[in-house]
Image (cartoon, rainbow, N blue to C red; front, side, top):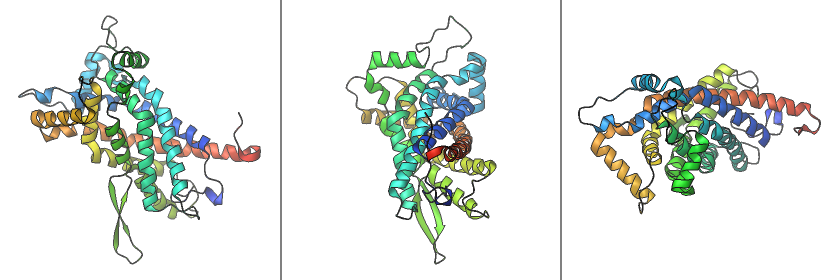
Length: 342
């Protein structure tokens, strides 16, 4: 499929919802397995109390990672992975399926997708995944990652034993609403991952024209379109190494633009709400306390492991997604009627 056209190669039908569902889910699972340790380090840095103690030296991501391995064994880096794997497949499936669907809805009669349409499709896809899957998944994941118990000591029993137990405990003690704590910040982060970058594109007259475009999807789409134009046959799928590179670059843009949102969200989701306290007041109180006690740098705590996780993660995601999508579409073409068998 062309990067800026919703039609398939050679004018064929676009990838089916089943293809996007399977390819997106598989890509998300691979990304989680490869990059989860960096996410655990990021969460620990964002929740660190050392920056709040007078004279305490901040820990870097390497020191934080080494500390987790020493005290909690290497398995400590994979705390919360169960929650991620439970949610990552539907998350990525919803992301890619909704993005392709929104693109088709916003395309013109010739199937071409404008920069504005790509912006809206990416923004809508980010918000959709945040509300449907990401917020509950991250609440459970962060509760598990915040625990400092040793994974090798059977007597060191944490409050949350696994993802299922954490879900049960949160529902029992705090109610269903706790799973959607920070949903506004999560939606803002996920949407802004697709909608906070300015890309300058040359106009036909030679001048520079500004377009507000989605970070992950638009950067990826634009880079993919450029590389496809450089090929002899534009509809030919890109080599895996090119997909990895453009996924790596596009994936790094989101974290740099919305790091403060992610840090506040992590602290908000880590602890139960106080009676009578609104979501807005909690966000404001956390922000004020961070700035007063830790300074402006606190809003960017964990940015290094986050970029290191998200950028390679996007490279893995887009590479696996494009590969699985191509394989599945070839299989669909070989079946009578062009549909999957049950």
